[in-house]
Image 1 (cartoon, rainbow, N blue to C red):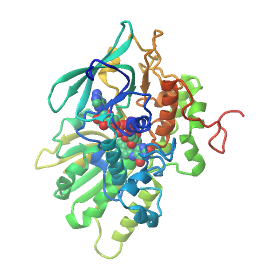
Image 2: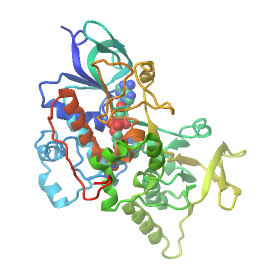
Image 3: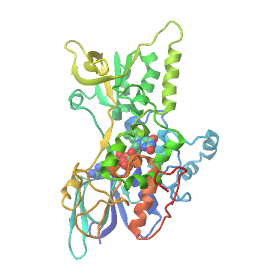
Image 4: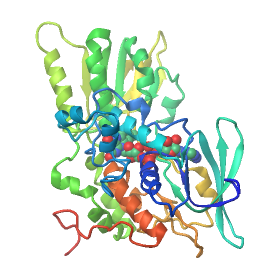
Length: 437
Ligand SMILES: Cc1cc2nc3c(=O)[nH]c(=O)nc-3n(C[C@H](O)[C@H](O)[C@H](O)COP(=O)(O)OP(=O)(O)OC[C@H]3O[C@@H](n4cnc5c(N)ncnc54)[C@H](O)[C@@H]3O)c2cc1C
């Protein structure tokens, strides 16, 4: 029987950290015959933001497997051990590993897990009713350009997020105006610019600004940072606040009415959108260093100001940003050669999910409905499930995109997939109570 004839237990769409974790956990289980398709040539985790010196924002224990099974061969510590770096890591004494190392670790794991297949883009999925119902998955092999069709009992969608950028910015030359997601390939362009402006004030904006600040003295460009926020606000990182990224909070949040969930989620920006304290410290320390002595640096940090438009300068190179100080209600203009937008990401929900629109349940906002155990809700009773990692903040809350909850989610998915308790789920895993006890 060819790979295309047989019915796999599970086909995964996308190999980012969330599905890679599931593939890693399933790798040791003979009971599940699975394939995971990724359109990139090899595993890559936000490559445009792998800036030297940036750190993973969760402890390395949130690797692909440890929170489910610390003895699993795909653990971060096994990666360190297999690469003969145990003593260096031991003397490093850090939980917050470099982001480049997390990427290297995931690449190492992805090469060892046979079910992960790269340069394979899933282009459509449909549900087929025959003697045995299944999903038909059409996959484009990006090396050979061939289309192959696979069959699966269940699907798991881990397609991640894509950078968002205002339309007027998208229409300008990409070498001058780009998203932070494309920062690394455009570093040389920044170095040769007369002026560079970063727009936005989340973690990516801060990491990009910090890196540019380090390079500014040597390269000599003017550097600006503009945000509409009232300040360069720090992320809420106290230990008790971090308990929002726990299975307990997911469980509490899930059972709230959807209207309440939307209202609560809208107030929780600083749990995930602000800037890490250590990044703010680094930036402040650099600004302070540079303020010593006669030689002043050419840098501006502008808050309370919305960038509402952009157009090329009438004469010469560069762009004019139309800015609005929303407290003073005054417009002003700002000029820059290079503009980097840190305007966030949105879930990438592939078009083929909409082809399954009659098969799935949708809420009034046009978002899919999700069961507590991460299955999309269906309009009819069939044995086939679509599990989902992507676009579930509206149902499962603020921790949905956090690496620290990925393994927990995969434990829930595996328990459902195998119809038994493969992994024991914690009754209570944190100190505080969100629900009435
Ligand atoms: C710059 C940045 C830094 C971050 N840092 C942290 C952090 O330190 N800690 C933390 O907890 N969270 C962090 N996050 C949050 C983020 O949710 C996770 O980092 C993580 O990438 C999510 O994993 P994922 O598997 O859902 O998605 P992704 O990593 O986005 O992977 C999804 C994959 O699906 C593939 N794909 C999409 N469509 C198809 C298709 N049709 N066919 C085949 N493949 C497809 C894509 O090519 C992609 O490789 C960060 C996010 C960003 C943007």
